[in-house]
Image 1 (cartoon, one colour):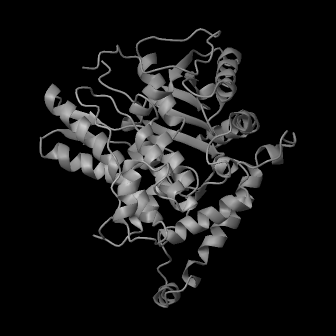
Image 2 (tube, rainbow over the protein chains, first blue to last red):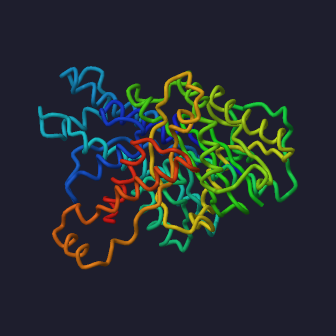
Length: 210
Length: 222
């Protein structure tokens, strides 16, 4: 059963877009993680970026967060932080040491913290409410170490197991395709040879979020 | 049960041979990330063309890596969605073609579902037994690719056996004691040995792949 999904951007897409506006390169996931990790340990972060909680649902949204970063950066580029900047960007700018250059590692860390906070908090809440015993992390963003660590700590306190793939198998690879195929083949399945591509294919779960 | 898996949904071309859903006999990925880096994201039309140039060498590398032939496969699987239509078509068509030609069952796989199965994958290898490192190089051949075998084998990630552990001899230890890279002089030797071996059998690594292997080994302090 599908419990929740993103309503706009995938988390990984947000990482790519934010890395691009911060000039950190592509792919964005590892670039942002590296930039955030380059900060001195325990350093206070003057930026705080929004979290879209979408309360009452188990869905996610990352486009607002993405836009907040874009406006924060554009505010600096244009040198006019007030016009066109979001409330959050203004707060961020006001909090940062005034007039200084945009601190890219700080922004990267604030963005990553926001994504991790929402993903972990909502996942842990869903796992607790449904009484599950194990959570599996998967996909490109599953390679994010702060996300793994946060989920591991939060789920451990609830006695829920967490498992995730080795980092090399979080990103796109063919081994996972062969693995998935094995478990289907064991049930005698096979596909017709006129099978066509399905660019918009979704997870094969019934949609019933909340 | 040995299954050949093919992945081509976006900007990476992958072929892998997995036994009983868990044991990886070969896993090859050719990434185009550096091609798309300047745009800050994947350009679909470029991605599908690169898929086309990478798919055959990647498939050949996977078989080489596993030391297996077409007759050793029990089924073929390929991603059929979600992803970029042009990229998906390359891997799906390759997979269906192989299955048809070899009379093997074909399975179309949901990419999102497959990400979940990655949780059961472990890098335990039944063969080859030597310690292996995965090294990366970008498939950066021209388009359209030249048809020569050397060129066709030019890309993709290859496995190069790493010298492990450091030599135990007194000389080696004292060199290591100096903290220099000299103690790791067996690295180029391993690289050259691989090149010689590759000319006879395996995938031909690009100079970049060898450099990456060396850098990787140094990073791991080997």
